[in-house]
Length: 271
Length: 248
Ligand SMILES: Nc1ncnc2c1ncn2[C@@H]1O[C@H](COP(=O)(O)OP(=O)(O)O)[C@@H](O)[C@H]1O
Ligand SMILES: [Mg+2]
Image (cartoon, rainbow over all chains, first blue to last red; front, side, top):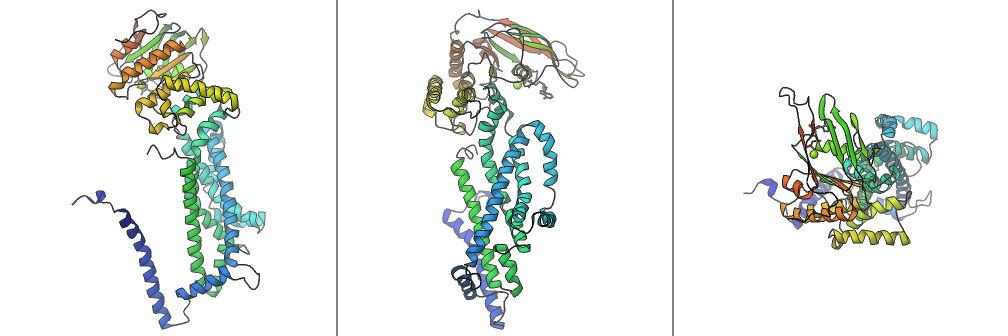
């Protein structure tokens, strides 16, 4: 027998192995749901797939009688808009500060420690402050995500930029480059793939902060909806929403990975 | 295109003396090769000449003027590795130096300036045999091709002094002969003064117009860091105005 570390599944085998846990979870759910509904047809904890179908039908494809909107799409656009703006702002802050801290010693010495300190603040702890100062509108929710995500990106980029081989920096200087030219042509292009990686890693916390903010103060959004229908134990709505949020997060991750391979074809060559 | 004088040069890291009282007069357009035991301060000497490190005492003079305290376009460098830009293709790696010179703000060239730069880069790529590979990234090149590109990149802005730190040390012995031809050709064409560290004694005598041997004059077996290295042998081999020496 070959060692375990040398035994690899084929392409079809890997697909099957990957699908297996999903199928297993599904089977366990169906079994448990059937058992509970057989005992009590009014049970709300583990709804049947038929009630999921009904809930999806009414949230995604029918107008809400009160607002006249398709709630699922409305919530999706609201949440995606917030997270997109927040991630774009965090990326911009991360890129500018991360590069300056990593490249220019005086900037690193003066704002490096303060960024490190801010990144230690638990963002949810200052959520009340944000609501008090910025009101209950969009700004506070977006700011919460930025406060949670941007310092992580800044520190990650600063570290990665400082790790660029010193030979490259010296070489650029011997080619006559100024500080600005080095940032523009040597550091920035090499920071892009790191930034995209960094964004992928912070997606999870971005969603966490988004849903937390929406749960507390909002009138629309995926997180708002889940916490609203919780009052009626509407698991038939909550579970499809959770699956939908997961799919959206997965899609964003995939998108960032695609952008990375398309925009930085050189980044994976050396490995 | 530059003479180099070194006067009473000392370099210490704390109590560790690396270089002690080094004196040197190098003429314009010499090809200086430097040999010496590992760890005796050859790279440190080159780093000071480059402006990455400052001497503890003493000074460097280039054409009689003090050395600037940071790297600049008048002194090119070829490291053993890591000195290419991984995100730029072969052609872009070469163009970069011309773009730095021609566009202070955008560091990019357009139109006529771009065409001229491309022309210049192309002829240099031909000279180092990399024109066919112009659209590849450094990670897709062999070690020898990477070093040839690194050398081309270092001479495109016509530095007065070219520094090489064991440039062929990591390469197959089979291709060093080609590399020697290349560096001699560029040296003759661009007329720069070259300092090259090598651990290959034969190479140092074949290429150099002058060989410098770095070694310690005094030894303290109890405290090896008490004394530094200096130039113990300074051997002029060939008259400097001689065109490129022929390979054996
Ligand atoms: N930044 C530094 N700090 C302390 N010691 C150093 C530093 N750089 C080099 N050295 C020491 O200087 C000595 C000479 O190093 P180096 O110039 O790299 O030798 P060579 O290139 O001749 O092999 C070594 O003993 C090394 O440990
Ligand atoms: Mg060395």
